[in-house]
Image (tube, rainbow, N blue to C red):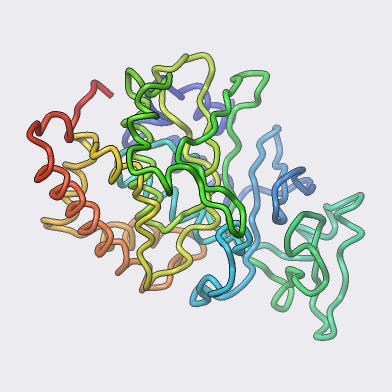
Length: 353
């Protein structure tokens, strides 16, 4: 078995991998070092992503570097047109693991040779989009909804490019997944607002709808809201679960390329599920309190965790500062809820997972 197959075999009902499972580091090493045998463009999606094939049917999803780490989300960009950042994918994996969720697939950075590891291995429509820029750099742009044109091409510097490599989930033939519309999904419209943005009692509607009316799922969405708020990710429209485990299982944390874009702005609307439901999982609250009270802050733990990545430093320093600031904001939101509610157990809930 490959390390990725071992990883797949250990996926359980309540997490993708167990704490300190050595196979996770082995998967990361394989993605960062193994020989690439084929490259193709992933179908669908708004921005360019490549499927990377390694020997023995191991695959990863490659998101290329587009701009320096210091570049922030452009002020006139909507969340659904913002550039995706390869560094956000890497950092999200580390953040998910530090939060104790373990619901995101392993992601590593890697530096590629544009000629030998992309151009010579590409074919078909993707190959047709490669060209040499006026600076004599090899570039490509692929085909997608946003930024797949010559003006937004991905170019080597001079012949290398870095990106994120996310391990593939088990195939849908092996592990069928169910796709759910996120109840706090944004409208993805320039002028229209979603129902939750206009209805202060929206959470009571969600609580009456399966699978949020019982079991763990509503608490899982609170976890996801905290996770997204910490990294500033507004792009959460759907989520997936493994069908084999039914409703008593975790939502996968996938696709975080639009996180870590605005380090000096805290988007409170991302925290709407927690604010509207006044609900948080006890273990998640305990983790946030540990980050806040020390002895080590979340920024320090993230910096240490990401230091071993091949493209470290992964994040611009202001993004790490923002993590500590946002931990305080979540904790204050919980305090406000506790001040409003008579029943502490209604706000801070515990389930067995």
